[in-house]
Length: 387
Ligand SMILES: NC(=O)C1=CN([C@@H]2O[C@H](COP(=O)(O)OP(=O)(O)OC[C@H]3O[C@@H](n4cnc5c(N)ncnc54)[C@H](O)[C@@H]3O)[C@@H](O)[C@H]2O)C=CC1
Ligand SMILES: O=C(O)CCC(=O)C(=O)O
Image (cartoon, rainbow, N blue to C red; front, side, top):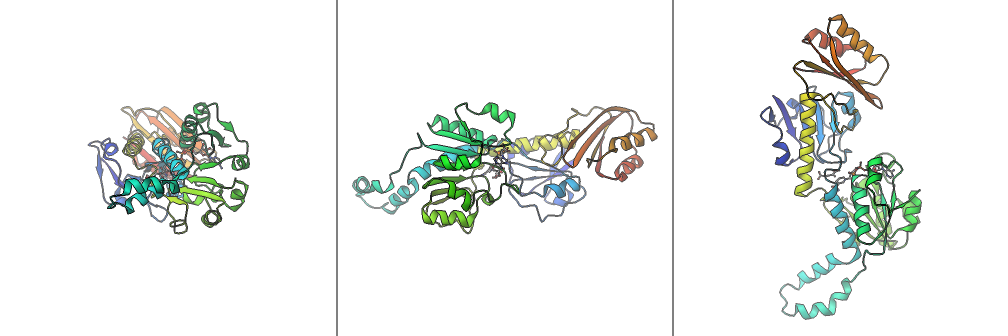
């Protein structure tokens, strides 16, 4: 029986996949796995029993990835599972910036009781007129699951689209419409585009990437959209640019004390992934990843350990070892198994940066003593025997 804990509400459709072998617990300390959306986990202490954290979503900047890796906790996310939800909100954001739809709707509500509203409307509506998206240039920074979808749909809206992503994956490149211009530098995109939307993770080299220097390269009256993370855009600099009129509108999914209430800032309360479909997709993928890891030891879509798959566990026992990616680990494991006269039926080892994972199927029972010896090997972070 495995225990899981939810730090945020997780869609029931996903949790339903955790069958009778799973039970929810309100106590994170006794959980084998944690499911989370945006709850901040940096200050949490993790119990030795915790084996995995699944982020039902894409961004993992709320989780201390390296500390988890050092404590032998595998962190998963759900790539692409909420990308369509975010894409649709980006398009809505562009439309809200192009015309004063929000101002117009608010104005109508003020006249709720007025019998002459139809007549006044025709007189006043010019105050809320705007422009169309067709024919405008859109720059997409980050061509991952969301960026590619935004770029492709913008092409269908008649926009001239520029994409910038120095690390674009082969899959993403295949999915990208051929009519999208490849910006070789982000500065080129800044200089060309009327609308700029950012879809990169919050990393050391992306935090604050849209600052006063970047904005100074952009066209006067540019619209910037940030449905990725607040920290990607320097808050003081964007406020200054809105006040001066250099930036016509800033659409963001991240309310901060600096941006809320600033004229021409369209601030959404982090709703990008808040659709039934995205919530279900993320929860289903997260639950499937956790099950496969807890029951078979397989790792899919981890952000701090390598992906590794030996299929469904058979009748024999499976040893899984999370360890540092340093020389002679496999030699030490196989020597310890040989010392117990154990036959290895199947073995896989994968590494990712400083961390590695070894899975070993054996034909006989793993003793507590062998488990202890494997755990004591220098560089081993966690050993688990799936029986
Ligand atoms: N508002 C919301 O509710 C949501 C926000 N997000 C945010 O959006 C981000 C992107 O999500 P996905 O597209 O699903 O992730 P993804 O991992 O599929 O794509 C990210 C892309 O950014 C690119 N990239 C990384 N560093 C870059 C740089 N310096 N310059 C240009 N490109 C760079 C990567 O190569 C990758 O192609 C997430 O990390 C998350 O922070 C994601 C989902 C929901
Ligand atoms: O779970 C959510 O609502 C937030 C989604 C998000 O920001 C992400 O997936 O990165």
